[in-house]
Amino acid sequence: MEQNNRPHSDTPDQLLEIARAFFARWALPVQLNHLRIEYSYRMTASLARTYPRKTLIRLSSLLMCEYDDLLPQIICHEVAHLAVYLMHGSDARPHGPEWARLVAEAGFSPHRRLALPSNSRQTGQEWGATCTNYLHRCLVCQSIRKSKRRIPNWRCQRCLDAGLSGEIAIEKIAI
Image (cartoon, rainbow, N blue to C red; front, side):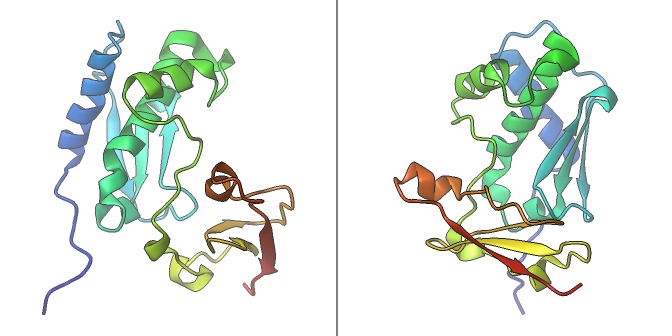
């Protein structure tokens, strides 16, 4: 029987080469000799996270099979965080103009969050998160964000970009 969830072919070493290519493209004087990239099965709230002081990029295991086509953009996003930290220290804003410039120079739109394909939306049970108390669902495209508390000022960025209201419905889930 054929499996739908195939493992991603990129190993952490191959991902390091992608990261180094972005640094080379940006002509940054800083070397990435100690950068580590690893997958985590515990990451369910985001697809990736950068830990600049540890020179570590942690990727959600979802990227191994479900969202692997987004991997170059996600690596660029995270490596840009690291580059800004190495060049400007912790004073620079995480998604500030320095970060946005690097992402744009790499050929991607500098977005804080990626809009995931609509056919891959998940419910709270599929996420398997036990600490999430609220699901925030877009009333138009049905995309979901989760959090431990209600955040009524959140809006769906994809719908806002399309000229729609981006209004969300907030649903408390049982833990």
